Length: 579
Image (cartoon, rainbow, N blue to C red; front, side, top):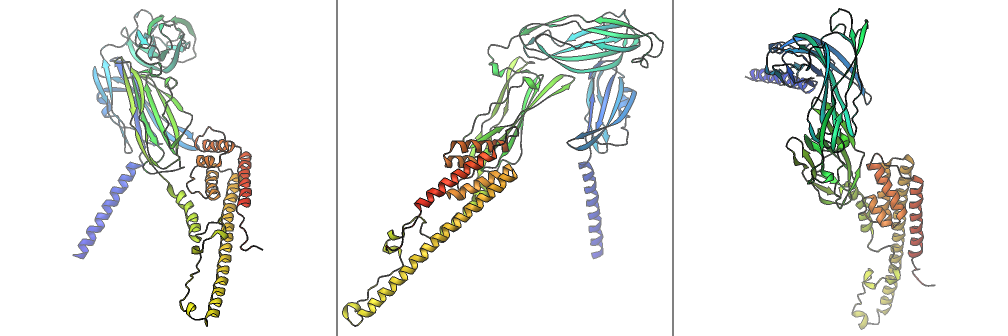
């Protein structure tokens, strides 16, 4: 029976180990993504599917399910290497040229590579392919805009197409420039189609145009300069060849778009015409248990579909009493896709609590104009609650003060001559028999003389204790001062900040000083407060300049020198006995 139990446990442990191994393989599997250059096309057109695996791998995807709805015209694969922040990253990419087999909505299936799975993609196949208005010529060009009427700063997609049924050796297109508008080049792609029953090719270039003022926006005529192949070789073999050729110059038609001003009901600061706007946030650490003086970083990401990052206004965050905010330089990025531009703006704020308690960061709102529904909408981040405690630093700083308070009940500044009799240990109990008998008068005199001598010794002991305590506190302050100077020499700003706070707690005997702002308030020195503010900004804001350490040292040294002079003049004890 024991043997059977042992075999069962052994088998179970092996099964668990095997499952964990499989789980670990899935956890460390790379990421697989799929994308297409076009998701709406004609039955006679082609498009490109790109699979990207973010690790280097020697394998080939399984195209069997793909062949159900698509013809595979060509496949290419390659490995890309890049170095980011000193570390090398590799990725493997497959490009597959596809032609649809039927009209309708077709699905590009998910692919699986080494445990990673890509998303399926839906493709819309229309009955007719795009073709030029005039098919009599072998080479034609056209221009198309996504809308004829738009609001100021709204995205307009401008598409230029060149159709050809003959081989070309080269294509040159002048850059698109539009007066009073921002122009962003989205992409350029090539695909095959049929033109008037003949095989042909399309070169498509797309721009996003953002008008900056209302009125009539003119998309100028664009000039194509193409080199036509005079040989007889295959169209694709000669597309960028160097054989003898003829040069043609072709122009697109001029386009005019009516640009409307922002509605009068919308405030100037709230005008963001976009397809969608969203807000998200990330915290550098848990916000459930923060500590006074310890920073936490909040990153707020604004995504605007149909706007560039430069069009997104900076966030205006309301101040909160007890919290200090340090804004870092915002990060911006424009991501391009088949639908246009998506702008990203990342606001990074370092938050430093200056006192303990419960705080609420108000909700963040961004009003924006929905260009699909022509209505105002609001993107919101909910309010955030923060709980801030004193932390370990204040507790550690409080321990030496508690020990000092327990050492003696007499303050160092107390004049010993003013001590009342009840503060001494002398217990004057005069026995009754001293009044009855004269025989013991001498004994009573000797008794009082003895107690007087003991009293003198106790006062001397208290005086010595006070001196020792004063020397000890002075030694603690000297140690804290030396720690500050060492941190100043090492130029470690975070260590320097902690050393200044520790010295201030010892210097003023005040354990409630837990921030540089509290040090500045205690000193009543504007120049010192300014240098301490610079130190905080240098620590919590990456673009701030470091404080002048020589000025900081001189200001604190002057403060310390004045305090020592004042203490020396006020803390002298008068002699125990007058001469």
